[in-house]
Image 1 (cartoon, rainbow, N blue to C red):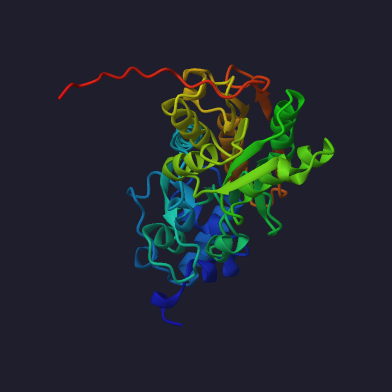
Image 2 (cartoon, rainbow, N blue to C red; image 1 turned 45 degrees about the vertical axis):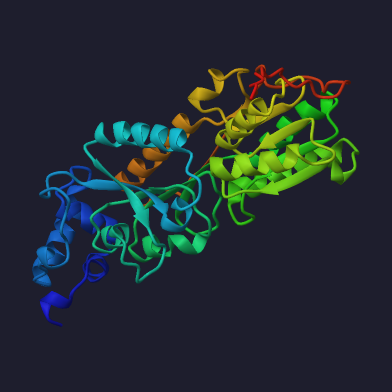
Length: 358
């Protein structure tokens, strides 16, 4: 075989190691056992492998990189910016403390994809990846083909060798719905997301679980689908509030939808929470500063990101590390946006009008 046709996979097979280990040796990563490094180097020499033919790192071989990736299909949906920025900051700090750089981007999830992230994966410009917003396990196939260590956030997976850091979205959502039911709400609307978005689907199931456990009619819940973005949340709230029997409470599958609902309700003259209670999910920073402060489910995004980085870095140090699944806890944070439903019709704020005489 001509040396230009060898791949990192060929070298890995020759040396009896993973592709990620070959990548670390090429980038002169310090956390490789001496015996393993020598075995890989011997294979490179024997195969007369030219790394520059396939491997074009972001920085000149001095800084190994890991990735924080989101499938491109999910990036087109409403993006929880506060959560995303929190995770990027925590992961960056964690990997830089261990001598790695961080690539942040999207990838198609297809073996022949042509996004920058696809090329980064194929060309082994990263030694491993943390992946968020996974819609389908099939999206992980390019990472599996590249034999990269992978940690998936907020979604359990069955793929061999893929690590996960998760919470019980369904149980957490059930607690949020129970809070409203215990306060006496019987007309509850849900601002949900697409059926195939794991976290949104699990949270909806949790809301439904709470209604069933309370022995209530399933029609207690009115479900409105959104693409998880504020604009659709606003329109869905308008539709709900103009219904002949509007809800007394709204459960949203993320805080941005909840904040959009609060803004719409206030602009229509409703007094929150007496006329309408609202519950979010995520506990972004602004949730505590709006008026009234938002009741929401606290997701430990910063700790999830920190543990994801730790698991990935440990996997890079030890390619035989066991597959890890870490389940973290959530907390319902009760603030001022919820109370018992009013027994009187919604009280509209008085709006001043001025007569103009012709």
